Image 1 (cartoon, helix red, strand yellow):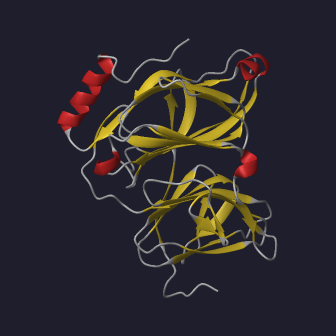
Image 2 (tube, helix red, strand yellow):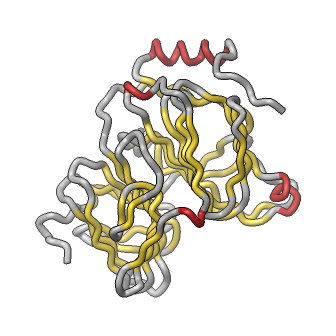
Image 3 (cartoon, helix red, strand yellow):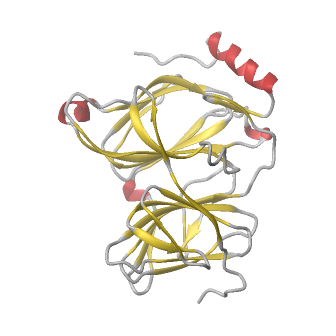
Length: 294
């Protein structure tokens, strides 16, 4: 059982804003918004969907650059194809994760696959932006791709709590992904009556984002439902989530060690100073981040 003296409380709960991204697809965005600018070391979280898309109407994110951070794409439904200026290409299907470290700079695209464009269907996924420390912002770009079948999973003894461990460790199971910034990224499902008691590093900023259902979070057992972000305080080394309802509760648990560095950001560039942002723009305009070949 969780020790009341070490259990984290919830400092705030708020609903994600709805906005548009890429070529005009709708996302639910808990941050950055007027409610929360960022969540060190995280810069953005977008939930794409869930939505039903008619044949021929799927939209994506055409060619665009990134520098100075990482993008983590986690797909729950649909199919995406990605290409980049370094000749890398791949496909994401339900349950897959792509971890792209933009580093010094890359141009890439994320678009619905041709097959999904023709058929339409359900689209649902997440993109998380993870800031890089100053020492890594100009590292060589890299990809880590993890098919759904290779993502470690675990389950509680009573079978009421299950998790897909994308980053960090949960229920005694460690992720396969290697991260530059120490973080945890876990997709939990709690069946009715399920209780999660989860240790987290004392220095991590931690939040939950509810995908489906309603749960009770933290030492106060505050209620939160789908499309809401739950921010945990720094007053403990473990946290508790309960599902007192009659339907499954699905949520992301995300946390990381704050970088505590200056953040300068402009669109797809995140650096430490305004001069570095200006240089990123110049490098992109001069073609030094490359271009995607047809």
